[in-house]
Amino acid sequence: MALQALRPSAARFFSRPALSASISPVSFAVERWTRHLQNSVHIAGATLLTGASTWSIPSLLSDIWDSVLRAVPKKKTSHMKKRHRQMAGKALKDVKALNRCPGCGQIKRAHVLCAHCVKGLEANCTFMGCEKYAACTWRRVVIEDFVLFSISKYKYVVQHESQVGLVDSHPIDIFSLAVTSNQILSASGASSLKVHSTTDADFPLAQSLDGAHKIGCHHVVTSGNGLRAASVGFGGEIRIWSCQDGTWVEDGDISAGVGKSEVWAIALSEDGQTLAGTTHDGHIKVWDLSANGEEIRDFETKGSFGTCIDMSADGQYIASGHENGSIYIFSNETGRMPFSLSGLVKPVRAIAFSPGGKLLAAAGDSRVIVLYDTSSGEQVAHLSGHSAWILSLDWSHTGEYLLSGSFDGKVKVWSVERRACVATHSETDKAVWSVKWLPKVGKTEGFATAGANRSISFYREATGG
Image 1 (cartoon, one colour):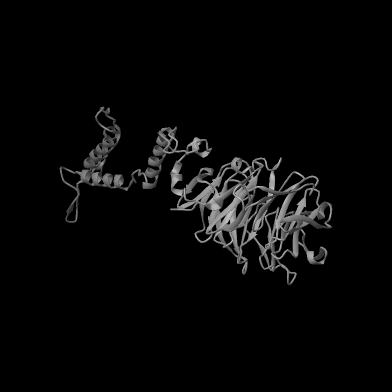
Image 2 (cartoon, rainbow, N blue to C red):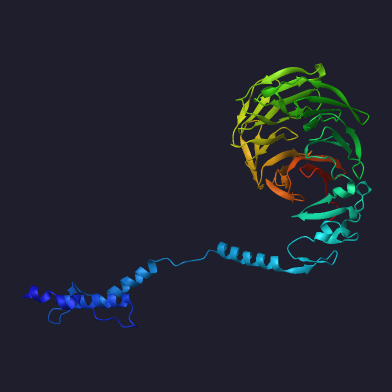
């Protein structure tokens, strides 16, 4: 009889009273189970006792439900996401905002440079404080010829090509630049090599080597002493040039292979006595120019196209980059390959030793510049920032900065110590095939760039405060 008394009525348990609009499903469920348990544990009006404790079932279920609610995590928005949303709103506001240029007074969008000032349309423009640099006397160039670009704390000035007469200096893309202490040589798809003076303010054309390569030239290099140069044409021919009193004359050629043995990229030693080149079948050849161009080395690789090459300042090592992403370092003294470097799985298009020879920079289709320690072959840094193929690299004379040019027209200056980009120039959206640092003028450094826009752009570090 007692067991029967404990059983709830089936009809009472399974009955479902209609829900009122003010009762939630959760409240209804708690109320139903509470009523059921109360009926089950109360026998003749007695309360369920366990030892010396008295349990109140409704309060117990309520506490359990509160703990469940506290256990469910609340949806939170991180500080970073809030900050991103704030910045996005600010950027949208900046895009729509207009203001007046402090230099020329023209109305412009607030977040971009003034088009009138950048293009040099105003003769007396004081945009971004040009008057502050009016004392600049570099090569007697007046400040109106410059437009100042300020990136972080590093300031560079760009001299307009139209003002220096270098627009359309070649009728076709300029593929390579080479510098001496007072000149810059340029090679293009045209048959001639151009030589411009870097000692004059307007960079005049000093010499044109007409007919140097019948179907164009893709590489030109100079020795460290500035007395010898070498160039390679699309026909596979290698020309050697000597400088006599500032005038370049042909000084013979190198008998290179044909077909797969044809030479592509070249590098010249500091003294101009040794020439190295890559071939289509991956060989690295070395010639002694003091012995009438005799071939003295022939290094073999895995057979991938040799896209780029460089020689250390002391002439001890040669580094080559290849189409399959391989990088090799060869010793001219032992004739062996000390290191085969990894890290770039895509074609390598530029490679360069630091002035001291302790670091090797390599870049290409991976859009990343990798720095290697030449004593161990280990990677020591990755420089990321380019969004297109990197086509050219060059170290500053002190080794403090690395210059890079890419297929999307951007030129970047990297601080080797900080492992970061300190300046970006994007005056063109066409490919930059070659970048070169210029000889120092006083305490300032400068560089030149050239590419698919068929012109040479010259940059100098801004002087003044």
